[in-house]
Length: 404
Image (cartoon, rainbow, N blue to C red; front, side, top):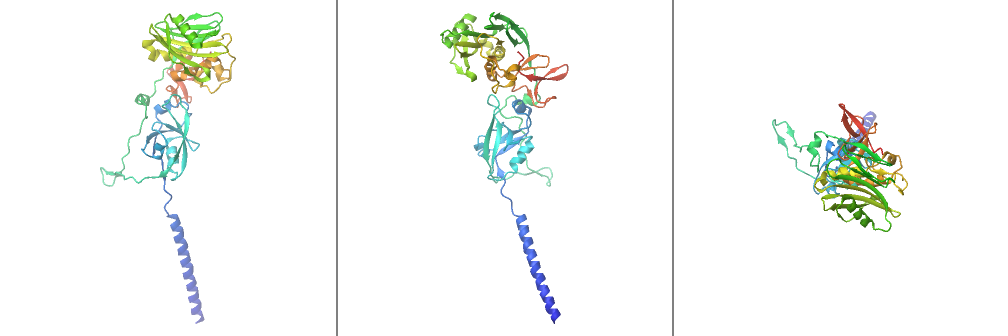
């Protein structure tokens, strides 16, 4: 009888222990199978970086992800993010590929605030900007499924990848950029020098290096540098009189436009059909001017090239300001001396090359070339990102900056 009581006691204890284990296991299983918090939704669809996007983001060292599509009324849309922009960082992490960008966004939960560093590749120079996006719960959207050709094969259709948004020339670039830097040849007289395309010549030079004038061998294309005392004359009156005297026709100046580093831009035209611009700065009663003049009928293509020649003219003019440290100037706009920290007045005037979409590069032999920095930059060149030209069946990497 005592044995029977002991067996019943042990049996009851076993039942209690088993019930406890079952309850514990149930709690664990419930915790494991509880649905996770809702996944975050931004409304961004990423696309791989195309050659068009790479060519238009020369300041992006490597990687990046193209924003192929932004859903209407999504968090990204409300934050002002546009298709065609390039993401370089997400929450401070460098984006190396489209896969990484998609994973970072996909793994974030609803309510997460994420900061995307974007390149606005449609507005002038390339400048990164930070945009904050707060993710929301992924909306319920019905999926359209097709069964073709076999009933066991179920596929959700997806749109084709986007080559490049907001680029009318993306088809040409997508097939591979054709980069032909314009070779430049040295011109000089006294303590003045510059670079110009083949066929240009020195048209004038002042013995005190206050004036340097180069011109194309054919057609009307002139580039000048002039330094002079104003002696109380208003800068606009001085410029108007100088243009009228130099080109033999009354000049009409457009409204002045302020430029960085104290320079002022004056677009002009004259009654003989000439047109161009003057970049000028007044310091201590002295004016320094860089002038580009072309035929009005050729202004669309001749003005940028002639302007680049003018903004590359350098003289040791009397009264010129002392060299200054480099102040955030792009390497393709300035001289090697400026890259090393001694920037002349010409280097600061040449910030206008940003508007002209021109830049200077050179090779180890000292040969100079004119490029479009936004278009002619290769992200995946044989010797790393940079500017290249084809010579002797090989690609030669060119370095930024002019050598005068």
